[in-house]
Image (tube, rainbow, N blue to C red; front, side, top):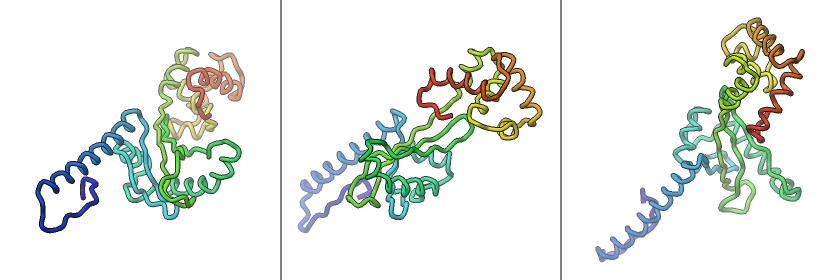
Amino acid sequence: LESGGVDYVTKPIKPKEVMARMGVHLAGARERRQTRNALDAFGYATITVRASDGCLLWQTPLARDLLEAYCGTHAPQTPPEVAAWLLESVGLVEQRAAAATEPPKLSIERGPKRLTFRLHQQIGDSDAAGDWLIVMREVSDTAVIEAMSLTFKLTAREAEVLYWVVKGKTNKDIGDILGSSPMTVKKHLERVFVKLGVETRTAAAGMAMGRIRQLQPQFEG
């Protein structure tokens, strides 16, 4: 049963029959484990959540690690923000299907990294509040920051400041993120303006976004 088998035997017990059944169940368990590992190997952490009560029913090992790192939760608890997003998304499924568009994704940010959640498909019952397969993907913008540094001849810290300007953060926000004062951020930004040949943060963000789009077309500013 721990291997995923659902079966029973009756007396008198026939050892060969029992061994044959165990072999079938163990083979099935190995196949399911290989499927979970294959999903993880390609960076697609996957979970199954019951929409009606937000219960986390199934997860790959990578999904377990990511949920713990980003949300601090463990099965069967689904992170509250994920459960709320799922309920909202399933309510839009029919509407989105008619328009041939996907429900909106959920993103949880941790510095230059973010964890995205995408509603993949419903499994089991046809009821909209049934079980849903959700695909998670961790994305890091470290490469984007490094590319901006090389492209615009910025220092590492100037590139970080510009990155957060693109993300719409204020000088105070950026200071909190980088552990600097707003005045220090302002000085970095002034040097960024000079190197980019612009006078406003809007112009700097627009120029940087053009470069970022070349590297990551799906980047969300």
